[in-house]
Image 1 (cartoon, one colour):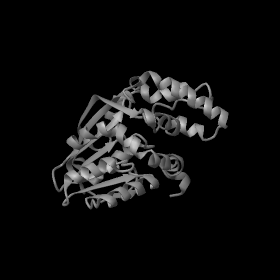
Image 2 (cartoon, rainbow, N blue to C red):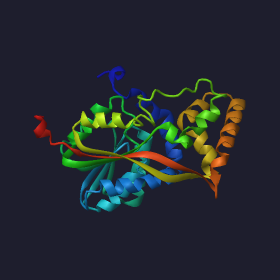
Image 3 (cartoon, helix red, strand yellow):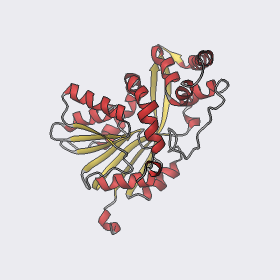
Image 4 (cartoon, rainbow, N blue to C red):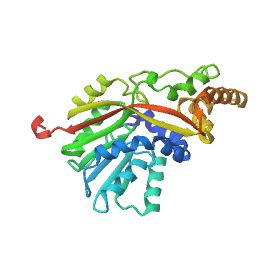
Length: 289
């Protein structure tokens, strides 16, 4: 397959060139912010000690490492991510801890040749919204899952329900005219905002007993990390790479001011409005596959 015909080519470029290194740099900030969302995954996706779990879009490995600790030395949590820098960071963390029950592979989960029927559970913390063809991706992941394996993931609900996540873009828009809102159905942070779309994707890709529940989880970013978070990550962070210093300074000041009302007790606090999604792997034999 030529590079031009490879799926998720834009995402591979983003996460291996611009996005991945920044996420590695901001790893501790992001882990602290997203830690409250890990608990539902660990509870919902834990198959028991000694089980095998696949973590899709594992990033720098925080969730996979937590799951690996619970699985114990006889288990395995395999993290897969399209980003080389993030996978390298995850491997380094596992090695530093001596955690043999965690392993990581750089791959596109939409097309990677997983060993069939090899996982008791599949989890993901905000790692499944970036596929060019999500139905194809979830079908590929389904083939890696054992019969009746449980899928558990969290994904953001709508931008309107997550104003914290869009504050930077709104504040920066007057200074960054090329900063445009993404297509709601395009790969990205809010690609799974539409509950019915998530249901259709899972129905079409070999999953059953689908349950999609809204959860609202308190979270925050430490005040000392806030400016770096809002000016280095997301669409604003990418746009600021290509502007002159005066524009960068004006944009940063506007963004900082926009977040001031959210800061209290040393942190910018917000509610993460998400979907907690669970499903079961449909028996492929029953589908005639």
